[in-house]
Length: 94
Image 1 (cartoon, one colour):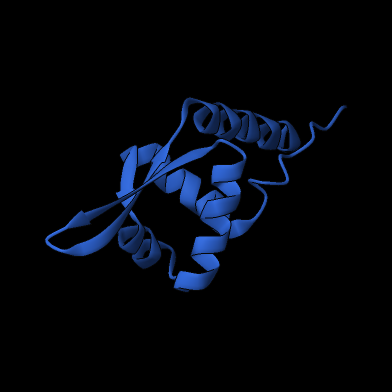
Image 2 (cartoon, rainbow, N blue to C red):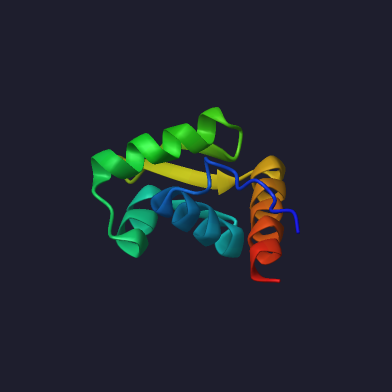
């Protein structure tokens, strides 16, 4: 039996939570993700940047009613990585 390698980027609990969340909603505000994951703003910011550097998420900064707003969106590469991660995990369950 061969075990598939797990993507180290998605093997972090918070990054996996962010990607899982974005898979279901496609796009979300930073504050929404922060609320759902119970992460600190600093830690979440670092982890989202790691996902961005990998090309798994896109980040758009804009203003809404004079307040800065950060939108995070899953990319096709991010969806693919998540699906591969899930398949790899399933290989451990067989």
